[in-house]
Amino acid sequence: MEKKWWQTSVVYQIYPRSFQDSNGDGIGDLRGIINRLDYLQNLGINVIWLSPVYKSPNDDNGYDISDYQDIMDEFGTMEDMDELIKEAEKREIRIVMDLVVNHTSDEHKWFVEAKKGKDNPYRDYYIWRDPVEGEVPNDLKSIFSGSAWEYDQDSGQYYLHLFSKRQPDLNWENEKVREEVWNMMNFWLDKGIGGFRMDVIDLVGKQPDLGITGNGPKLHDYLQEMHEKSFGNYDVLTVGETWGATPEIAKLYSNPARKELSMVFQFEHIGLDQQEGKDKWDLKPLDIEELKAILAKWQTSLGTEGWNSLFWNNHDLPRIVSRWGNDQEYRVESAKMFAILLHLMKGTPYIYQGEEIGMTNCPISDISEVNDIESINMYHERIEQGYTREEILRSINAKGRDNARTPMQWDESLNGGFTTGTPWLHVNPNYKNINVKENVANSQSIFHCYKQLIQLRKNHPLIVWGEFELLKTSQDIFAYTRTLEEEKWLVIANFSDQVNQFTLPNSGKHKEIIISNYPRKQVDLQQVTLQPYETFVVKL
View 1 (spheres, rainbow, N blue to C red):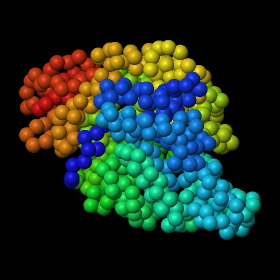
View 2 (view 1 turned 45 degrees about the horizontal axis):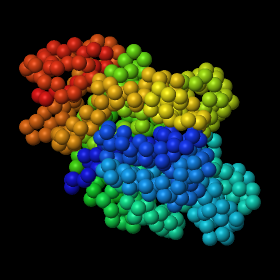
View 3 (view 1 turned 45 degrees about the vertical axis):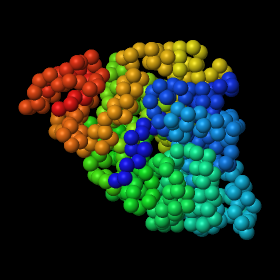
View 4 (view 1 turned 90 degrees about the vertical axis):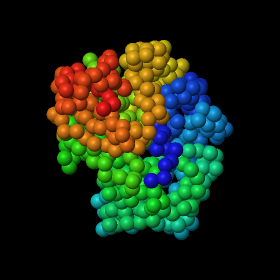
């Protein structure tokens, strides 16, 4: 595999609404991000994945775009965007834009035109169908609850929306649509961005009449065309959000010989705490053996035909320290455990804002406190189905998307230093104890653990290129080795709040520790007693 800059990189995801407000309107903005670039440079990351900042009416927090070549008023101007790209570049940080091209906003000029009638030149930019026996064309469901078809009174047809009814799906079979997309991508690439994260890209090959949404038959033709007409001519990172990907499917996207994407986000590990065959709200406890097996499979099965993205968190997922760690007694220890476990694996790590200081989920006690459209729709749907309010709120507190979206906690001042105004979403009340200022000042903090991990990746080719091997251990111990030529490192994590034993026969005593989350200088691997969530890395 030809070596690329993004294989040695660490990416930091910014959710702009919640990162830093610079003008007191309670909403994060581009100037706020510019003001915090020195912090990110200090952390050591070299790529920012920026969630959407395009013009949008905000039905789905910017994932409903009304103009791909303009900036949302609340976030600033195109001049601010150009300055962000330049200022990041000065700090050797590239900006990866969020590419949302499965659907647009219903306020996009293409859709406004398309609704004017069946003979409008933009009509075929979207997916329209006649009623079947006076009803919806078929039983396709929206990911945000209800039917995926919305009736248009004026034309007597339905249009497809796999998300909100205000997010009509684009018709990728229309060559003009694809040309518009390539032109828009090149507009951004010419500005000097570092690539694209591609929102639900596995849906663009959909064939709704056959009930096919993900991984449609023409998907990879479209991606190869996209590569040829846009980013293939630039040295950039491209990562696809692909919910249904297996390692075999991932290779189709990311095998360099196929000229598609750099890598994909796969979500197999993310579904492990939901009941089989149910949706994400139906909770079950995490089985650590399953987690080990899935992560190890993805580490070993791509070979030279693909590249892993490594992540626990993003804007759609609850905070990992609250989800599978212990965000109370062992918050610092378990947050560091997740960091070390992930960053020593093979692939490009992604840090979601606030993860590096151990931000936690923010439980609510009433649906009125929720902003996220997915959680709100699910609440009303389940109330009708007879679920209790308590059951539904328990699911939202565990998995709701607002958990990740509460404003960044910068210091102990009002609203965590996020805004001088009223924040668009409640700030987690624990900001007085959990914030950037406290983390940066404390050399034993979660922030400094992340900083050390990023530096280790820069200094040790073994972390980037080494072979991965999972070790057989007891249920709660997650242990693996990374090997490059003569060098071999061992990573051990106690994935529980109990004390556990670990032995590695014939390993010798007094191994020097490379990084750990408890104060250990060296260790005897023939008999180790691991404290709750204790994690360390040693050279064998």
